[in-house]
Image 1: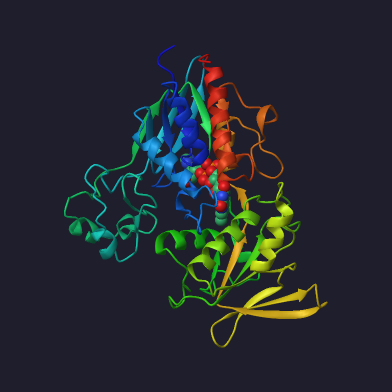
Image 2: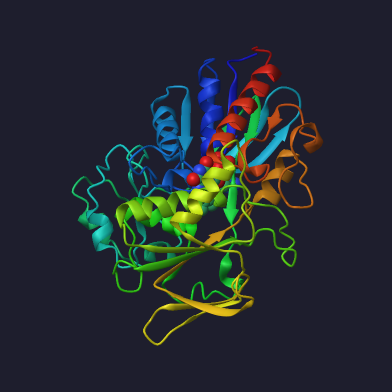
Length: 409
Ligand SMILES: Cc1cc2nc3c(=O)[nH]c(=O)nc-3n(C[C@H](O)[C@H](O)[C@H](O)COP(=O)(O)OP(=O)(O)OC[C@H]3O[C@@H](n4cnc5c(N)ncnc54)[C@H](O)[C@@H]3O)c2cc1C
C-alpha cells in the first residue's frame, strides 16, 4: 500500500484529535474544514476560571488546534468541502472544493486594517492566534462576491495579502480511510417566544461564549453597558416534544453555572437567575455542588411563557412560579438562551455520501449500528450531544479504528 493517508471532514475537537492521533503513527491526514477557521465550536469558547481552573475544556481546544497546525503530518484545508467520493478497489477517490482564498495565509500578519475598512463587515478575525490565516473574508457578505467592485480591503493591506483573482480550487485526493467529524449546529431560537432576533439583549449561550472571548466581559449588545441582572433559560430547543428534539444537550447544565460563576467573578454584584426544567448532571459530589449553586444563584424550575421588551428597554420574562403557585415576571438587562445541540445542517448529505446511517433524531448512528462502510468512522457530536472531553476521546477512538483498518496496529 502507498503511504497511507486519511481524509477527515471537520476540523473541530473530534476531527483534530483524530488527525493528531494518526500523526503519532506518521499517518498523514487532510482535514477538510467548511468554515474559514478550524477548531470547531469550542475554539470560540472562553476560559471560565475563577480563582482556580474549573476544567471547562476551552484551553484544550486551543491546545489541539496549535498541535494540529504545527504537525507536519496534518494539512488543514479551511473553507473547503467534500464534493465527490467514490471507491472501486483500493483507496477512495475524493474531490475537495476550496472556496476562493482572498487572504494569503503566508503574507497576512493579522494587522486588521482590512477589518476596519470593510463596509460590509465581511472580514472576520480568527478566534484563535493559531488559526491560519488570522483573518478571512466571509464570501456571503462581501460586496465583491455579490458582483460589486469594492477593493477597500485589498487597498488597505500593507502586505498585499488580499486578492480577488484567486479562484475556486478542486483538489483530487486518494485517501485510504475517511473520518466524518463535522460536528453539530445549535438550535435556532427564532421560533421560540423569547424575542431572539427582535430584542438585541436576547442572546444565545454560544453568543455569550463568543462575547466573553472577544470582549473579556459581559455587555448589553444594545448599548454596550454592563448588565446588572441577567437570566438564563435552559433547554431551549432540547427535550422538546413539539420539535421532536427529545434529547438532552448534555453540556448546558454544566456550562451555564460555570459561565455564571465566571461572570460573577468578573462582576461580583451581578444578579443571576436560571430557569430550568431539571438538572441533568451527576457524579459523586452532585448533591453538595447543586446545593452550593442554589446558594449562589436563583434557580427557578419553570419554562418562561415568553419574553417581551419593557418601556425602560429591559427584557420581561413571564413564568409560573412553582413555589408560590402563581404567575410572576422578572425584568432582566440581558437574557441568555441555552440553545440545544442539534445535528449539523448538512449532515444528511455528507453522511449519505460516506454511506453512514443516521438515527430518527438525525445524528449518525454509533458504532456498528451506523453500518459504516469499511474505512469510514464518525466521531464527536455527529453521533449526538457530548462535551469537549468526550469529543476528544471519540476522535481518538476513531483514529484507532482507522489504524486497525489500515493494518497498522
Ligand atoms: C453553548 C455551548 C457551550 C458549550 N460548553 C461546553 C463546555 O463548557 N465544556 C464542554 O466540554 N463542552 C461544551 N460544549 C460542547 C462542545 O462545543 C462540543 O463538545 C465540541 O465542540 C464538539 O466538537 P466536534 O468536533 O464534535 O464538533 P464541532 O465543534 O461542531 O466541530 C465540527 C467542525 O466541522 C466543521 N464542518 C461542519 N460541516 C462540515 C462539512 N460538511 N465539511 C467540512 N467541515 C464541516 C465545522 O465548521 C466545525 O469546525 C458546548 C457547546 C455549546 C453549544
